[in-house]
Every structure is written in structure tokens, then in C-alpha cells.
Image (cartoon, helix red, strand yellow):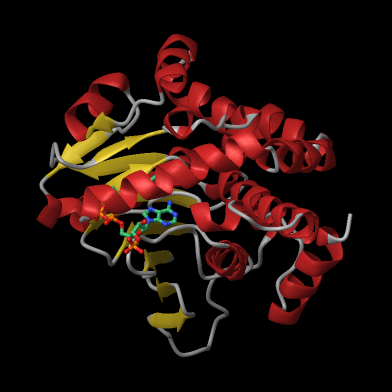
Amino acid sequence: MAAAPILARRIARSGVLPLCCRPPSWDRAPRQPPGLPLAPCRAFSNNKIQVELDESSGVAMMKFKSPPVNSLSLDFLTEFSISLEKLENDRACRGVIITSTIPKIFSSGLDIMEMCGKNVEHYGEFWRAVQEMWLRLYGSNMVTVAAVNGSSPAGGCLIALSCDYRIMAENPKFSIGLNEAQLGIVAPFWFKDTFVNVVGHRIAERSLQLGSLHPAPEALKLGLVDELVPEEKLLEKASAVMARWLALPDHARQLTKSMMRKAVLDHLVAHREEDIKNFINFISKESIQKSLRMYMEMLKKKKS
Ligand SMILES: CCC/C=C/C(=O)SCCNC(=O)CCNC(=O)[C@H](O)C(C)(C)COP(=O)([O-])OP(=O)([O-])OC[C@H]1O[C@@H](n2cnc3c(N)ncnc32)[C@H](O)[C@@H]1OP(=O)([O-])[O-]
């Protein structure tokens, strides 16, 4: 598949290790070598994501900043994977809080334009980047907390579901869910598995079949998010939750997390190429392309 070397080159250019080469974090050296001056805060930023690591707490704040709606384009996904990998390999980092700088939007999900009117090579490269992002986030050794400060459909919901804990702003106008069926497309098995692991089979089945977007209070009732807080308290709450999770020894928490998630992660790793082929075949169908075009037109009409 031509897409594999392309993504490998993109990642190689950035100096990021592939997932399989990542050292387990319970094997890491002590956080602060003795005798070195404390460096309390470090930041890095790329076009679509900004990251600030507080070395004294070991917590990174990752903010999506890709207007207008933080859609997950190929470039966004690549930057996201690179940012996660940098943090994963940083001995000073134990946890990451993920949020958005865009008012009212956490992420609008996969960029629909990446799935419309492109060639087979592009679809393959795009889908590999979606897989890569999920493998890194769902398989992360770090504590991951989603501070969902706006709407979060489809791929945006997947990001939140892949974290260890989800806190959402208690605004009923913000909704979250895997709404793929509303677009005439189907969430792949690993989106479904991640969803089932959070809310259970019955809720996931009903919500997926209906392509439901759940307003924040309903999302809380379903267990799709863990807590609702006033928007202005979201980051404070996320930091408090993070501190509680980081109070445990890393190795015990990490091994437990890995035990809970391994089967689902292994399933995709074992079927990655097949999953890419399935996506390409599915998304290339004229009927699917038509559904996506109609959905984009509906979004534009709603705006005008
Ligand atoms: C098998 C595959 C699995 C698929 C998984 C997925 O994630 S599928 C993804 C499922 N995702 C969804 O179903 C989410 C669909 N989006 C929404 O529901 C709303 O946009 C919103 C609630 C996120 C924000 O509402 P709001 O009133 O604040 O903003 P607005 O609506 O005015 O949009 C502003 C501009 O952004 C554009 N644009 C928006 N989203 C996307 C996108 N994903 N991509 C590309 N573009 C997108 C929109 O067209 C408009 O462009 P224009 O006209 O300026 O050129």
C-alpha cells in the first residue's frame, strides 16, 4: 500500500518514534536528574495544536486550535500523533489534559473534505493517520483527561472516549456522540469497541444505530461523560481529577489500563491493512460520496 511509506516519511521527518518502538513509561528514568535546575514549564506548538507541559506536576495541557471547527484533517491528525508521541517520550510528562481554544467546539470530527472526491491513495493515507491517532491516544501510558468545552461529534467524540476521564461543560447546547449513521456512513469496529467499553453494549448499539448526538446532560446520564461542570470551572476540575489519578503509582495504573484496553487495541493492530482496504472500498462508493456531499450542503444551508 503506497500510503504506508508516505505516513512513515511524514512521521520520520518529525523525529517521532513509531508506536511499536515506544519505551514503556514504567521503565523510565527518574523524572528530574539530581543537581539539574528545575525547569517548571515547557511549551511547543504547531499549526493546529498547542502544548504546555508543567514539569513540576508532570501534566501537559494540549489545546486544539484549528479554526473554524477543529476538524480532524490529515495535517491535524499527523500533528496530534506527533504531539502525543513527544509527550509519551518525555520523562517529565505523566498526564495530558485535552481541550480546545475554539469557543463552543471541542472537535467537529473527521474532516469530511478529506473523505470527498479524493483518490484511493489519499483515502488510504488519511485512514492510516486516523488509526495512528487512536492507537497512540487509546494506548497511551499517560493519564488522559478530556475537558470537552464544546460540541464533539463523531471523531471528536472518539477522542474524548479514548481518554481515561471525560469532563464536559454543562451547556445543553453542546452535544457529543458517534453520529456517523446520520451522514450515511458507518463507524468502524474500533470506534464501536471504544464506545462499548465506555457506555456498555445496549446504549452503544442504540446510539450508534440512531447516530445520536447527546446533549451534555443526557451524555452524563448515559455515562458517555463522567462529569459536567460550569464551563469556567472545566480546566480547574480537569487538573483536580488529574492530580487524583496521578496520586497512584504509575506502573500499577498503567498495567491496569493496558489490561483493560489490550484486546481492543490488538484487534485493530492485527487488522490494520484490512481496515484500511475496507475504508477505501466503502468511502469510494458513489452512493457514499453522494451522502457526504449532501451532508456538507446541509451544513452550509444551516449556516446561511
Ligand atoms: C467511516 C468514517 C467515520 C467518520 C467519522 C467522522 O468523524 S465524520 C464527521 C462527522 N462530523 C459531523 O457530523 C460534524 C458536522 N458539523 C457540525 O455539526 C457543526 O459544524 C458543528 C456543531 C461542529 C459547529 O457548528 P457551527 O455552527 O459552529 O459551525 P458551522 O456548521 O457553520 O461550520 C463551520 C464551517 O466548518 C465546516 N465543517 C463543520 N464540520 C466539518 C467537518 N467535520 N469536516 C469538514 N468541514 C466541517 C462547515 O461546513 C463550515 O464550512 P464553511 O461553510 O464555513 O465553508
